[in-house]
Image (cartoon, rainbow, N blue to C red):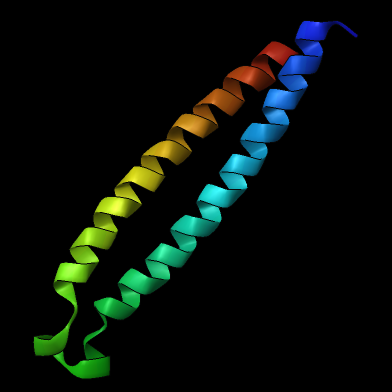
Length: 81
């Protein structure tokens, strides 16, 4: 096996790990955002909107990183064919 092909396999493994981690972080963050915006817990007037806004900013960053990683994984998979 060539050195380049082996490096692609390592990159693929790293990307798959990164994608799993990003997905788990996104799912956890969505749960927190959902609870902060759930009016049945404390009423509409007590929803944690400022916190949710900050968390949404973080969610956008994680989601963007996920899209990049998925794109990179697609490229690596294409090169391994």
